[in-house]
Length: 135
Image (cartoon, rainbow, N blue to C red; front, side, top):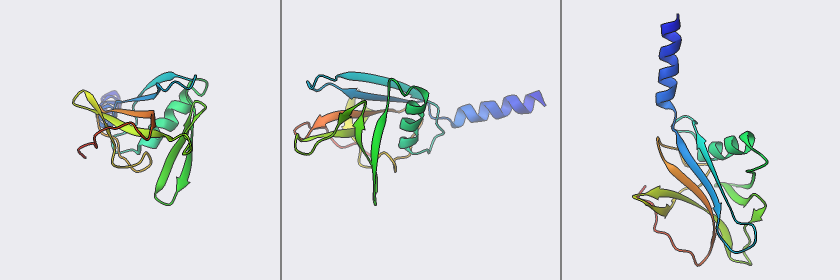
């Protein structure tokens, strides 16, 4: 019986993603922060679940707001820092790829996480430029 339980725990560990998630605001708007979270959501889970896990685990240090659109959810606020079209700011969804950041081609509610990724939500301006991720 114990061998079966140990084997199931081992299989679960293999299927978990161990995704590192960072929310960061480096803009000079007075509310700079960097919040990191290590998630063990299963491989193939939507990235939004990683964000929800981080918020549930530590709502004093990390909270976010998303708006549902027909194409999926869009992050509009993290830790009180709100995206604003008039200020030309938004929350960008990025991934670390080959030691630099790239802009994801899909959204937070549709992207399926992969093992050992480092994903970011970063407060950006319309003038910030990142290359698109390869996939």
